[in-house]
Length: 81
Image (cartoon, rainbow, N blue to C red; front, side, top):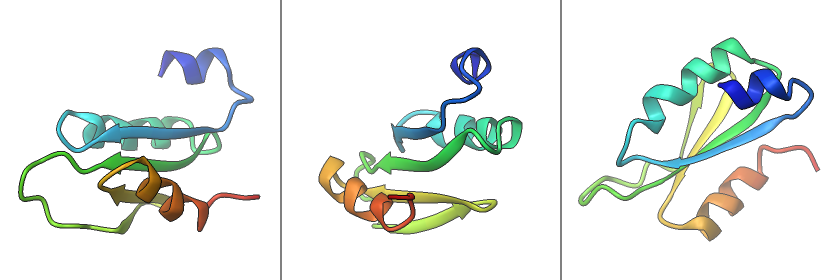
């Protein structure tokens, strides 16, 4: 959150994975900086996790994918050109 506070004019795409605490942390960042996050992408690393595709955190797109290419394709549908 410090980066978002230090650079309030930057709009972030948050990229992480579902194997750590990213999914718990990112919604807090979206809540505290609603105009500073364009989307959230989580790589699926947990064994046996089902493909979730796309969800939402409030009005924020949250996409899941097996790798960076899949995340990019899914995010591009939601991010401004």
